[in-house]
Image (cartoon, rainbow, N blue to C red):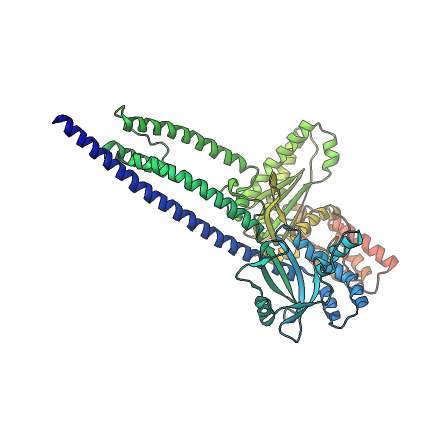
Length: 599
């Protein structure tokens, strides 16, 4: 009788365990598969949306960066009746080469993804347009000239027809003169990939007249790779989930014990990052051993967590946390090649003057000690004024101020004060004082990651950055410490809060528009600051005469200013210019803009 009861109990226990295992196994399998499918769909939709945004940005970038004058001249020559010789003449023109190069520079941002980039204009027929410049044309012609076989049908010549009958989005973009992106993929047989097209209007300089449209076709190469990897990972995860669900099902057969419930509570607390919590082990059975194993695992995770946190903090010294914040990344582990964002910021460039000559007199160790001593004083000033250091370039510093241009100006003034303090320390230690040049400029810039999979770096790219670097170099020309552009000056919340002086209008190498340059002299010694303030009105009058071409009048005032500020390099510079212009004269179209050919 006892044996029979034991058998029933055993059979009943086994049957119940099988039911629990099957129930949890089926539920876990269904959830795993459902999550994999949902994840795949969400990722696919997200990648498609990201590709749409990318097409939109590239097409708008093309429309905004193309040289308007060159493009307008090309558009004026477009006609459906051009002869082959006329087409060839246009395609060998400087305007055509300039626009083609600009389109190809946009393509070079990611050549594996950007399939085509081209421009076209509408015709009187709704379904027909004419190509202006196709980024593939000149490279194709050059490849053919070097002996490669390039079929004629692969070349889209100037003023060739573009049938829009199968491109409703292109027709709509032309009709409404606004940026539009296709809402679904188009299969590209030539490359055996899906492509997505976007179109953006190119307006004339008046911002109203439509010149043409920029078209960009992106391939879904990256999206396919990601989806393929995700699918593979989903299968692996699903298989692992099925195995895990089997073990979990067996495990849940014992959930009706009090010890497991207590363990579950501890695990939940641990999952909420309470890494100090541990299980109290009261037995040596399965529950007790599980509790002991959890404690061991918790010790390992806690140790790894501390090491990872220390590692991320160490990475923060090389990759600024602000840089990650602008890329919307939690940590450096989340950063991917090609991540980028556009922001308006104020850039600060600072460089030690005559550093090469200074470093030649020091050993490598002394060089590093000197630089670290100097930078340890400058860096905190930048951070305390809501800026962050983007990179060190030898003895130079490039810093970014994302909030207000005033932060950058105050930081520059603070750096100058800190330098005076540092020079006092150097003098007491028997070292020569040092001088720095600081340039400030405000503008839109691109923050992102460049490089390749094994080595990448955060970088900032824009014309505003290049101009700021040139401005810092100009501080040597004018002998002043802090120079800012007129654009930065116009962005200041209260320019009267600073001591400012107009310095010059310059045209630096690589730019076509002159830049007004101002000096910030708040950090000058009190007697010099006071003298500059007293000389402000006379300085303004002297410049009025100078830019009006009345060089003798300007010379007289500048000589008086020279007596007030005998060591002012800017006054000396304008005196030399006046003498030169009085002796040699100036061109008829002279506007007082100085061409500076220095980096």
